[in-house]
Image 1 (cartoon, rainbow, N blue to C red):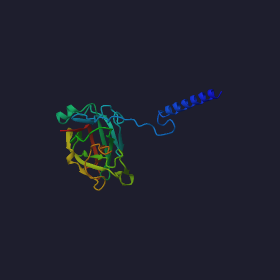
Image 2 (image 1 turned 90 degrees about the vertical axis):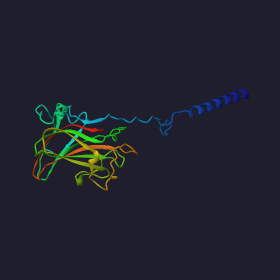
Image 3 (image 1 turned 30 degrees about the vertical axis):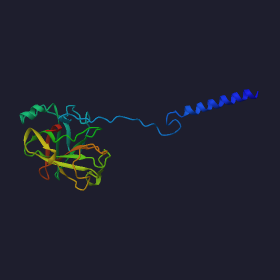
Image 4 (image 1 turned 180 degrees about the horizontal axis):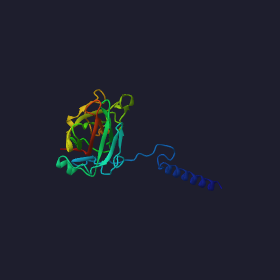
Length: 247
């Protein structure tokens, strides 16, 4: 009887040891621990070729494929180019069926504007040297288009803004360029990014850094601000084929 009990005890001990050994291979997290870390290869850097098309508005929508926000302006909408045939031949040929129409009036220069978010993971926009677009002017009284580029300096991929100060960025750089629209018809406009100036010194790092490095989202967004030629004036022009270019 004692021999049988000893054999049973020995067998139980072996089973207990095997069970403990197997538990050592249970997935992490099964007993409430941290989940296993998944090792992933670094995402490839995406380049869009010599031209990075931001929007040509051919969808006829400001919601797709790229979403735009529009603020304060009387008319900020996609319109047909059917009757807009005058201007530089190269620009007339380049425009498609639709463009972004800005029209409004003001009693204090500012007429409103629009913007769109650009940043995507593993998207390198630092290789581009120019902002390019086709603009349809309605003569010398068309107004001025201010182009704003925002880069990410606090590494959160978002634009922190102060609503009490005209939604000025709190932590990130804003680089601007003003294009006076004083012509009639379509015109191709190419603006070297080097000509943009830091509009908010001592906010951010005051350096143009569109690259995604150190957790930064790089070039976050582009925004248009429409300004009249006089304090009590109007703006009226169209924008098409907004792009970043290498040359």
